[in-house]
Image (cartoon, rainbow, N blue to C red):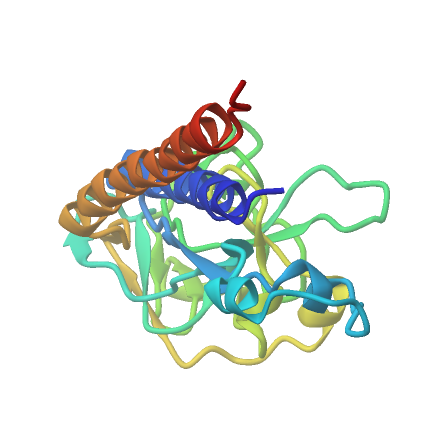
Amino acid sequence: MNYAYQIGSAGVISAMFRQDVASNNLANIQTVGFKPDDVFTIPRQAARQEDQLHTLPSNELLERLGAGVLLSPNRTSFRQGNLTQTKNPFDIAIQGEGFLTVSVSASASGDHIRLTRDGRMTLDARGRLVSAATGHPILDDTGRPILLRRELGVDIDADGTIRQGNAPVAKLGFIDVPDRSTLRKAGENLFAAPPAAIASKTAPTGSIVQYTIEESGVDPIRAMMSVQTAANQVGTSVRIMQIADEMMNRAISTLGRVSA
C-alpha cells in the first residue's frame, strides 16, 4: 500500500479520536469534579519492522519516512479543580489527593465500588447518604452505606468524620489508590478500580472541605484549541491522501501511457 495513504489514514484516525476526546472534555467544563483526558500517540514502525520480517528486502528511505502514528491509551489528568463555596452542608470538595467511595449495582465479578471526586450529596427517602448526581449510596470507611437523621444538622470534618448533634456518627470512605493508572472511567463521573487497587488503598493526603464543590478540571480555552487543532489535522491528513492520489493518477495517465 502507498506509504502516503498509510501516513494520511493514520493521521485522520488519530486526529478524529483526539477531536472526540477534546470535545468530551469541552462538554464537561461544568461537570463537578470532572477530570479531563489527554490523548497520546506513538510512531508506527515500518511494516517490515512491525511484523519482525527483518530478512525481507526493503527500501531504507521509505522506512525512514515512517508509517504514521498509532493511538496510545488515554491518560486522565487528576489536577486539582477550583473550589467554589456553596450554602449546602451536604456539598463537599476534596482539596488535594483522594476519592470518595460509592456503591453501584454489583457486576458479574462482584465489583461494586466506584471512586469519585463529585462531592455533591443528599439524603434519600430511607435516610441514606447518596450522591446527588447519581443516587448511588456513599460508603463509609468500612464499605457500608451511611444512615443519617434528617432532623439533625450535619458537620463534616477534614478527615471525613460526619457529626450530628456534636457526636460522630460515621466516617466517609475517603481513600486513595497507589497507582492511578489502573483507574478507568466508568460513566456517571465515576472511576472503576481493579479489586487489587481497592484492597491496597491508602490514606489520602488531601482533606475534605464542607460547603464547597470542586469545579471541573477542564481548561475551557485549552479544550477549544484542542478541538480546533484536531480538526485542522484531519484536513491536513486528508490532503496528504489527496495529493498521493493525484500523483498516482498522473503517473498512470502520463508515465504509463503507451505510445503507438
